[in-house]
Image (cartoon, rainbow, N blue to C red; front, side):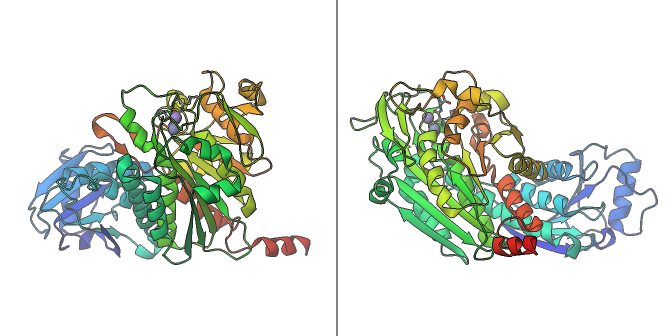
Amino acid sequence: MDFELKSLSPTQAAPWAVDALLVLVPDAVPKKTEAGALPQLVAEAVQRGDLESGAGKQLLCYRPAGFKAARVLLVRVGDGSAASVRKAVAAGVSALKQPGVKKLGLLLSLFDADSHAVRSAVQACADATYVYTATKPSAKARSLQQVVVGVAQAPAVRDGFDAGRALVTGVEFAKEWANRPANHATPSMLAEAARKLGRQPRMKTEVLGPKHVEALGMGSFMAVAKGSAEPLRFIVMHYSGGAKDAAPVVLVGKGITFDTGGISIKPAAEMDEMKFDMGGAASVLGTFAALAELQPAINVVGLIPSCENMPDGMAVKPGDVVTSMSGQTIEILNTDAEGRLILCDALTYAARFKPHSVIDIATLTGACVIALGGVRSGLFSTRDDLAQALQQAGEAALDPCWRMPLDDEYAEGLKSNFADMGNVAGRAGGAITAAKFLQKFTAELPWAHLDIAGTAWKGGAAKGSTGRPVPLLLQYLLDQVASGKAGGATPRAKTRKAAKA
Ligand code: BES
Ligand code: MN
Ligand code: ZN
């Protein structure tokens, strides 16, 4: 889908040559309106009570006098915040999903749309029209081809527009890979997708196979992969947009392309949804796709341990003890707690980049779904500043998370008589004990963990990937650029010198 940004006043909207015109109307409509077909139409619709207030309320006008567009849809946008823009655009674009609507004019100049509002509008357009086709060629492809966003002053909101466009690329990349069934998204296929991304400017991808991973000593990761005929892949991506010596942000994504549970096998009901167990990996790939497009001044490393979790004669068994790359031994009491087993080795590997921060993203626990549902991702961090930055990014990007505790008492249940730790504790506080397990591998790193088990995909009739938390991650990275904290305009060395001076 093609997006374009343009300065356009309400008076200029009527002669606009588009298939449909979607007009966002704020709560506060000026009583005395300007001349021109659109301001008149809006004023009359509001005065006569045909366009109620409340974000999402709409009035469709067919071939209204004075307009070039055949369909003019007025949608209420409430206070004009990013959240209400998302709601209004989602409702409006869904109503205009018709084969005849290929070019859409989206008018935001009736209210004071800021950068966040514009980004949110672009995102909502894409969200409402996304169609999965990879293994369903009969699905009706997206008919909307072109969206022109009209605002009062284009230069003032260009940032938000560009971020929105890159976000659409990233979110759709993540959705696409997460939605693919496991036989169309094996670890090798994910690695291939990452390699392809690596051909873009400032990007580089390395893919390590079983031999290399063994040489690194990733015994925990290897144990999970043992039961599968599909070879594991460890994907290492670099986006180098910042100064050479600037510490990178490292993103680590859980890439279990299918989770049967292994020998501790899962029940059959809804097991198909375990194809989404690489949602963390998909979000890392999606974030890199967005970075490639936006080219911000920051360094980012993406790490994706990827394999299947299968039962087999060769599979790891409950009670088996493995040695992780950190040297710590792990008693695998439940082979279904495999996410933490592949992430722990990737977290150990992350330390070599002397990172500004390390964030792992994982569909880690059913317990997190029970705790937070599908609204907020679980956020765990040993650093208050990092937690706060991620929380704020989530709010700004409308991709929220909620901080959970990491008291040491929660780690009690991980004690083992046969290894440095077990891989599971009891049922209580399962999302937290999983995070406590990961924490044992983050030593002094500024680390955060996002449990996206509830937010990465939807079940039921709307079954499909959400592309979350790509919006949160991209927002966090852009915030770091803006504040000059990571890999941005101020490289580490310079900052140190400046501090001395
Ligand atoms: N991938 C699952 C977590 C999951 C389950 C996400 C359901 C979304 C919906 C993970 O690998 C898993 O199986 N976790 C176990 C951990 C348990 C064995 C301690 C779980 O949550 O049941
Ligand atoms: Mn599992
Ligand atoms: Zn899993």
